[in-house]
Figure 1 (cartoon, rainbow, N blue to C red):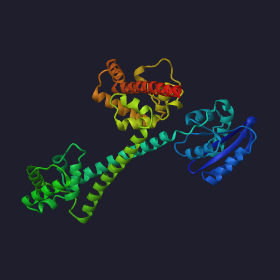
Figure 2 (figure 1 turned 45 degrees about the vertical axis):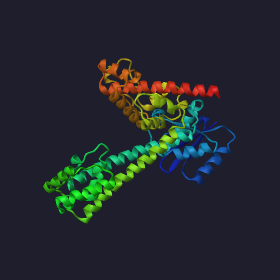
Figure 3 (figure 1 turned 120 degrees about the vertical axis):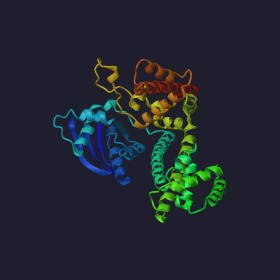
Figure 4 (figure 1 turned 135 degrees about the vertical axis):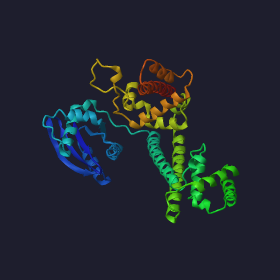
Amino acid sequence: MISVGIDVAKGKSKICIMKPGGEVIMAPKDFRHTKNELQRLVVQLHSYDEDVKVVLESTGQYHIPVVKYLSDNGIFVSVVNALRMKKFTSQDIRKVKNDRVDSIHIAMYGLTYWSELEEFKPANEVYAELRTLSRQYDNTIALLVGARSNFANLINNVMPGIDKMLADGNKSNRTIAFVEHYVHFENITKKSEKQFVNDVMKWKTKKGYHISEAKAKEIYALAQNGIPVLPNTKSTTIIVREAAKLIYELKSTRDTILAQMQAFAKTLPEYSIIRDMSCIGEVLSARIIAEIGDITKYKNKHSLIAYAGIDAPPYQSGKFNATERHISKRGNAYLRKIGYEIMQSLIMHKPDGDPVFDYITRKRAEGKPAKAAMIAGLNKFLRIYYGKVSELYSSLHSYC
């Protein structure tokens, strides 16, 4: 019975190896997250004649390479929730905190809860890749929002008012293309109205946009009366066109990632279930599956709700005012975000007979604030999802 406590940091970790009774086999020492040093650790742990369990706490992304390498090489690894580990270490009356002491505490945790340690199970490759894609999709969307905001500011400085005049229903693609082409009002007004109108007609035909001659004349009048802030220089041209190029590139990246996400999601049995649920399109379907992952890893529906961080926080009294109760927010923030998007879609479309939307409506009628009603709705949604997907996998296993 040997417990290996690892206190994980970026690029390196502190390790302590202990046996029952506080016997230290290896005092805390550093090792780097390289193949050579991890392989030496694997060889050492396999050399022991007793059962060996490695324990470490979840630390964002830093622990993942260590866990994967050890697990792939046949080592029992248990990843413990950081809050649970913190509660355990807080029992030490000395309250000392450093990497050396932390690795000792983690090893002691392993000995204390030896029989309760759950072995880390690598995620199904499809779920793992799907989650990676989903997180990158989220980052790309954030970058795209920022790029569009930046371009909107540039428009106000080179062609104020053109965005409203050319507003279309496709995320202002026409506006971006127009500003990228002409860059500055001075490039319009240096032409005669007739020359500009003719030029716009050729441009819009080539690009496939609709702009009437009347609209072209309105743009010319706007340019004559507009007051750009930035000068019509080569630097301004570079800034505007590179800003437009960035938007195009981010949109292409978004679409490529999304296509791959959907391809992976469609290979999973639960995809058909999520698509049958109200107001959840292909994007949200792929993303919610990515964040929930393999349903079989959850003990029950309450585990999934806790993972989403929409359960009530622990240590609450049975006597409380319901209007003052808050969710724990200790779970997966990405899952909560996507879940809220689904709730907003339900509220927007108001599907008849949908149990989740009806539940949200009932909670609002009971006087719940809008946000509280959405959280209640998300809670119900996850319970329904868990039930349907669990039933599906049970039937598949029975069939096999």
